[in-house]
Image (cartoon, rainbow, N blue to C red; front, side, top):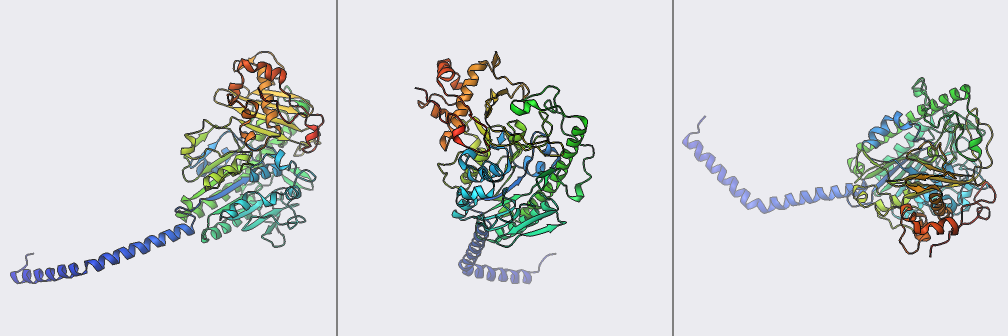
Length: 581
């Protein structure tokens, strides 16, 4: 269609008028556009600040299970962990608790201190439990208190620690929590009758409700509250799965949620080399255990299957938290999520009844995943790390100065940090005092001589485990060729990694002695105490022939004069090494 001459003239006149008006109004329009953009950006900044985003400190969601194994393949039956942590985050394959029992491990984790420095070494008085945590002064100086000092809102639901009970919860209240809903003893480990205590309210028991689902529900409520506040946040979520159901001191198989009770029919404990071996293994009381008969093996398989079933509700909990985060992208992008457990677990390894507490890889090497800003996806890191490193790691991510008293050091979790790991230590210090705690229907009585000191030394070219028991039995294992710890090399002739076993043992014993009562930097840089000149930074450096006489003849040895139930230094022999001069 073509316009007539008149039509063209009219259109031209109209366009001229519009152009003139736009010309006269351009400053006004520019100012309006600028104001709108400024207003939008300001709103975005406010929203980001309110959601812990854009220049503020990061948020943390910390999920900790109870007694979860790494070496019995429990993670293989958790698709949510695989999908949201293994694929979307980084897995630390050589991460260790430093004491393989619930309350002491959790206190070390929350304080960044080894158990010999917290002096919380048991699950109950006089050497452990919540009352010991209080009497040692840790209620004033642990992670949530420190985070609140830095402007964080802090939340927690689930199990805090053993001995936190209906009679101790308010004597005093656990400090540092903006809001909480704790599981309390004596019902902490009763899956369908848990007692919970919210903020400073009186405890409430929930018969017929599944405790992991209650923890999931509370965590979502806390997440809603945290997102609505103008502050970064930390949320601790601590279901009890897959811990044994414990009633009146009896450790029974865990109870799965009813929706999961028929899953995995026929599932059995992995038949690893060290599972119920024909020849006894280990040292001290472990080496005296009888081989389990078929009735016991069948029972342990059922126990194992119940553990895996109980973890399915934990997977549901993870899904619910991730789904809620995804609804708020600003929070999602600025939140670190961690998945770990307090200690590992064994069932049948070395002929042991279900339990933890022993100086074996199954009890100490535990799951640890982290995902969030700057964290590599689908990455596996094999550097040795421990629970005492977790608080320093959170401090570093949040830009909080480290405390000199920390016995751990920041983990290299981001891609940038992983580019510079040459300075990291190659060891993890492990320790335990008191009884072993066999679980299940065929556990027998507790052993009275389960006190020991142990160290793991892990490098690219060597991997060793060394233990000295309170009865002065010794164990040393080449973990590359013998990951099941079946062939104790202590006292044997020959070489491992090209080193004479006697001379190697002397070096590791000196390392363990240095760690025995270490504090602060000595715990992360023990070779500097042994060699003040600074010319020894690793086991490999210490193996130089020039140091043979020093370690074999001159250095003090790790010894005990008695097996005690708690950390009593007067019964632990030498506590300080001789320094090389």
